[in-house]
Length: 246
Image (tube, rainbow, N blue to C red; front, side):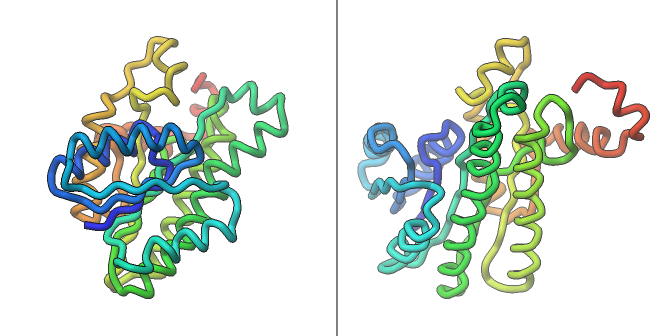
């Protein structure tokens, strides 16, 4: 099974890779910005699955030309079965409000970059007539909230974008999967844990993500309880919502 993982050094992506290689031998391409971190992930996966092939590629995640070339190279010899786009960043909202450069980078990393990778690989999957493109969004994209509206707006873009891709490929052999995690126990959510939150174990989240990709679920929350939570949040009347400190 040929799998390309974008943002392979993220905790969720790394644990998804562990699930895949522990299940069967895989041909993995780990795409990251930091070569040393990616190599550490690759070595760990090779130890866990000596029969798997693990390659590493690094590039600028906002370089459209480099992203297009990477997608072409990744699919050149063997058709890609799964592409997982998993990168992102979660800055403190108040810092992003005060720093326009951080605001811009938050939108670029969480919206622009994933869309560039998705378009590049969607073209390759369409050419091959097969494959699954999975994109990690967030529950934060369901409704703008003062606690994280810059990050949430970027993730909201990802949801609309994924819906458009699903419409584009509807009825065909290419599947598009949108994954919407709630807070997960990773370095990215360290501040959530510090404030007393109880993020979901990353191992459990990864298991659910792999299961959802296998089943080609169009969109799903993980853990599943976030589906009900966000249903309530999305439908709160504005007069009630505006009183909440969320």
